[in-house]
Image 1: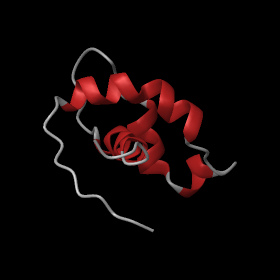
Image 2: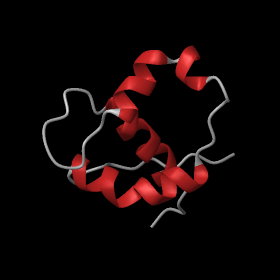
Image 3: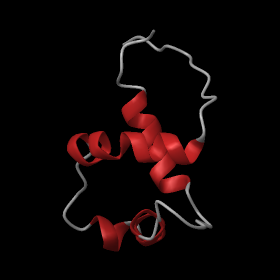
Image 4: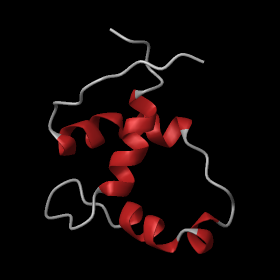
Length: 73
């Protein structure tokens, strides 16, 4: 396994929106993920593309995991 450090300097909201299709395609959750991780599920499912998001850590974490799957530039 190789680790490639990277610095994220793009707008977080733009990154989340841009990667949303890849996140939906590549991330698989356990059947009971909403019960096992209720805060994560609430933050993820209540994220708005436009508007105020109090908690964007869940979508940002999934976006980051998808971005890290890309080969280094």
